[in-house]
Amino acid sequence: MDILIVKLGALGDVINTLPLVINLKECMQADIYWVAEPLSYPIVAEHGHVDHAILFDKYNWEKALPNLIRQLRYQNFDIALDLQRIIKSALVCQVSKAKRRIGFDKKRCKELSWLFPFERIPESDPGAHMVFQYLEFGKYLGIKEKDIRWDIPVKGEIPYNLPRDYVVLNIGATKEANRWRPIGFAYLAKIIMQKFHFKSVLTGGREDIPMAKNILIMTGDEVINLVGKTSILELKEVLAGSKAVVSCDTGPMHLASALGKDVIALFGPADPKRTGPFRGEVIQKNVWCNPCNAKRCRDPICMTAITPEDVMERLERIWSV
View 1 (cartoon, rainbow, N blue to C red):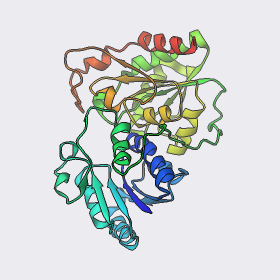
View 2: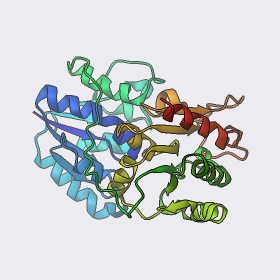
View 3: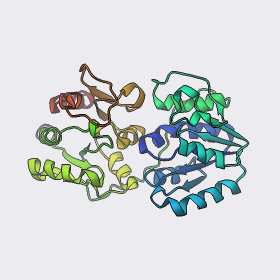
């Protein structure tokens, strides 16, 4: 049986889809084909339960789109799963010659993607964690409940000559409203060094380089700056080798959780019950306006209310066990 997974972009969404893919592979003896965009493609391509990773380079879509269509039309898929629930992912499923095309129920679809003539899984709680929502597709296909696993391979080769003991501070977030203050990360790095003698390693994308520079001004050599330097596979190894990971609501948070690391997630406008770490600690202040799911905010009080002491309390609790 050949199953096409259409989950294109965000790293966190891809990570949260992996338990479903593992179940499809093991319970249905399926060959798994997965269409992914450049950011998440390396994670998909190296996963042991994915047989064929198909790259859709959205940054060069004029050439990538005809190539993608040719690949999808060439293969006779038994099932195509639209897990993205937007127009783009629905079109990818539609282009495939799958015998069955399956998507979310109407209420959980976005961008009118429910108009496509797909089978629809039954309505369910839209506030449930996304791991559980993706697993509903397995239930719809007759897969019985199983242990939830990610099985992300780790080589154990930590890059950049990092010290044996370190804490990762993942400073970035795609949505501006999800970001914590530079001074918060800087002070946290200082007290981690003072109390535990662990250096902090800053991670993030190229867009986070200015923020990292501000943190470095406040901390000096107490932190190691890898912001904008790591590939996604290098980041995976950095996270896997850490003592703990402190992160805002963003993809590397989900990756660290899937790797089984101690995760402290800093949440503001989003609902952690739905998009928080599947395993880990969440810090979210009880303010009048959250969860609002805003992408930008003039006064993000839900994030500024979080203090380094809040994070240290969670770290001390974890390490005292």
